[in-house]
Amino acid sequence: MAAPNACRCVVAREIGTYGKVLELRGSHPSADVLSEPADDEVLKVRVIAAGLAFPDMLIVEGKHITKASAPFVPTNDICGEVVEVGSEGRSLGFRVGDIVFGVATTGGLSEYALMFMENAYHVPRGVSPHIAAGFEVNYGTTWHGLVDLAGLRKGETLLILGASGGVGMAAIDIGKALGARVVACASTPAKLEICRRAGADVLIDYSSDDFKRALKNADDVYGSVDVVYDPVGGRFSEPAMRAMTWGGRFVVVGFASGGMTPKSAIPSMPLNLALLNERKILGVFWGAWKMRTGNEGNRKNMMKMMEMVRSGTLKPRVTKLYDLQSFMEAFDDMAKRRVTGKICVRVGREGQSKM
Image 1 (cartoon, helix red, strand yellow):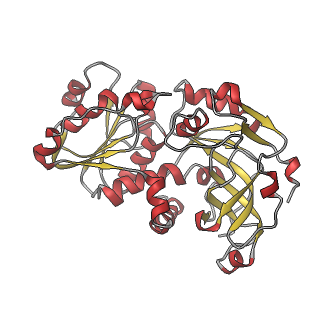
Image 2 (spheres, rainbow, N blue to C red):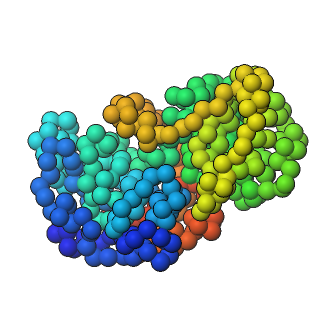
Image 3 (cartoon, rainbow, N blue to C red):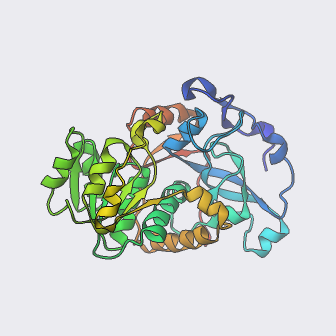
């Protein structure tokens, strides 16, 4: 493994505005940890790519429920090549040269990282490392919400708010794979076109002030929605709930409409809307669920979904790749809402999965 002092990485030197606190460095703030031999719990990996999402920016700015202590390397959704593995890892099937994906404990925007073996998964042969790097958080969150919690079934109608975003595009993909009718809601014709290409059946532009009317004007949507997937919040949540049918399930994922102040987008939902038609409100806290269950349920989900990717049943997309030195452009694009779907940062050269 390369010496840690030769490890290029992006570092948040303190908590604050991303444009002021992020910088590209030649050494890692956890260089002492990276330099230790791999023990029986961790893998050392050469990072190929790191997935980037809006919450990563909120964490840098101290506005997310997940808190970090500076200095730190942002993001943790990675794909990389194993360069060191302990004896226990070998007994569990990990080998030097394996291509793996999952959560990096030392940050993703770095040439090298550590991963706990319980959070690492093999990449199937033929699956792009860039697809794998951006997979676990968005698809893990969305599968947990739609399948584990909401029990989305074939033939049901799924309405997705913020459908052109990272988790939104994952919801379109999973919804179509499960045989649901997918209603995609987004704010511009260009974003809706991306949703159409991803397989959405009905497109709704919610840029106007009257989202409820837009829902009523859509073909057979209002009153027939079985599941709402809501990573947006704000003024869009209540009309979406009103569009649900008997026994509808409202899946709360986040509050992206608040931008850099997500608390401002937490809606005050009249609870009589849950009482009427026996609707259910389901909160998705994927990261906490994953930890509380020792990653057992999430690992099963990852393996199932990766097999669906390998077979072509799921079709995840990375809409843009950035080089490590262009990391600030990636953060700017997220902050200015120029991002659709999942974006990734190319950190190192690609490897080929052996699995």
